[in-house]
Length: 258
Image (cartoon, rainbow, N blue to C red; front, side):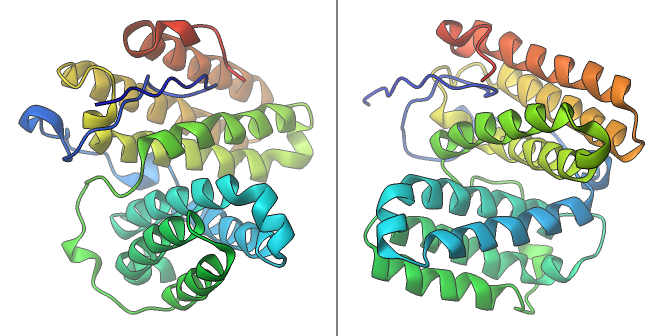
């Protein structure tokens, strides 16, 4: 096993690679209703935004070469968003499409790691998967994306969220969407315990993921209520969940929120 050190912002752990799903047989704790931490409408908007963003990058091979890592991160994030939508207690067109979207997003990530032509072809499959009529009942909370890619995505999302806090009234909808994405990543990352530096600390990992999810949910609620003061307080609480997690899983990252 070869550790890969990452300096991340709002993230939930120091990562290593290993095989398997949940380490040492640890069970993911029951999840609350997804509507309580990531409203379906926000996740649907995020799915559309990520797909549009990937499509823009793939308009030219030159852009793809410059932003290849972004395409991979966005595809991995799409897989998690699709999983949360598939298990969501609110109905959306993407609920039935979730199984196909997860698979297509995973294939897009793998294709983007290869070359431009493969990525273009895989993106077309993602677009087609949006209208798939599948059965989400077979979905469960399991690993669908790389923790490394998810943890690299979180500080990017969080940085935009914090920038938009300076224009809270105008950007409340985007803040709500970004906080829902962070909450979804936090919930989805519970299944990636085996990729952390301390897979034996299952209970702590689950607690940190839940704390991050719930803090992001408070940002989302405050944004929807147009409560700037509440959102500021929730953003600070979100940063604290990261520091608390880093103290156990990645002490070098303590205090680094960008």
